[in-house]
Amino acid sequence: MTKQKNYKKTLFACYLGFVTQAITANFAPLLFLTFKGNYDISLEKIAMIPLVFYLTQLIVDLAATKLADKIGYRICVIVSQAVSAGGLILMAILPDVLPIPFAGILISVVLYAVGSGLIEVLVSPIVEACPFENKDGMMSLLHSFYCWGAMGVILGSTLFFTLFGVENWKILTFIWALVPLYNTFNFINCPIERLVEEGSSLGVRKLLKTPIFWLMIGLMICSGASEATMAQWASAFTESAIGVSKTVGDLAGPCLFAMFMGISRMLYGKFSEKLDLTKVMLVCGTMCAGCYLLASLSSLPVLGLAGCALCGLAVGIMWPGSISISSQKCPRGGTEMFAFLALAGDLGAMVSPAMVGSLSEMAGGDLKTGLLAATVFPVILVICLIAVKKTVKKK
Image (tube, rainbow, N blue to C red; front, top):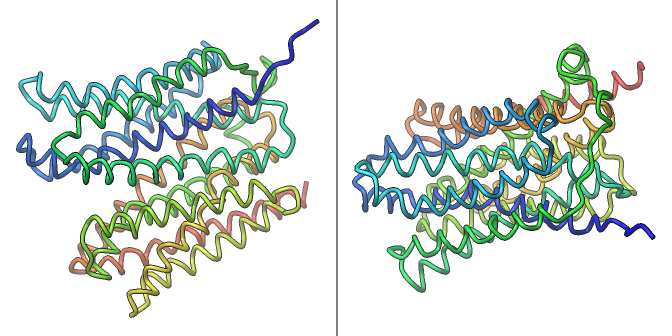
């Protein structure tokens, strides 16, 4: 008698995969001022940490288009967890061992960024390949674990620093490293299927010649930009608009944003079978543009904070929704498609926050001006969705 495969183990491992990505993306920024004080690193150099993180992810996204299919999903996803754990562990060791502490930090960041990039490319197609019903809902629920992971890192780290002091950050780094270390063994044992049969995917050339694929790329760029801009500037916006401390700003800004984003993905995961994904995305895109306008144009600080928090509710569906629409409209896209989608999302997430910062600086440090300019991304997302609907109707 053939033993039935337990795909719930696969799903659990993928959930923890996104929690791992949340740890690698959100933990180091909480230590920027600690790095500055402990190792005498300038803020200009510290600004290179997120840049190196996202650039490494972009390179991995691009490389993974061929790598995953050649050596297999399982090996790649196990490596993603192992290097994420290794990068976190080394971040607590290398700065004190190497003659240049900043070099030690960057080596660690590159390592766990490789893990984060592989997670981004592999986890969604692994779940997509599992024989689950209601794939849209599964994808949305899966991506909600990045939000809960981000909240957990912010709240857990804040609590740890309050109880034990920020000087013990290395102990906390080892604790967070246990998550990907444990998850490495989950991916060793869980069932993993191929997304498409070998030789049946479109391949890169045919994929790049498919018009609807470029609309999906547009969706992902705008999704990444809409999500990352508010996520990265929420704390600074809350502090400047309401005049609170950094601790309160972190909790009221990015933490509240992440909470609403997670709620949005969970709700869609529960009710997705009764909803039209494209219509939900159109509503979310319109709502997101409204939230950016509310945050940037409101003269009342409370309304600005509401725009910031509710933006999480609006952007929650965008990234997983864009992936689900791509899977529906281009079912033979294969691993290459998921890699390009991740690349596009990361590109939007890297360019838009930098654009907001530059425009705000040009406006004399007025963050609202930068956020107003970022309204263009959810507007373009809505235009792309309308174009997708028209393209499908023509076919």
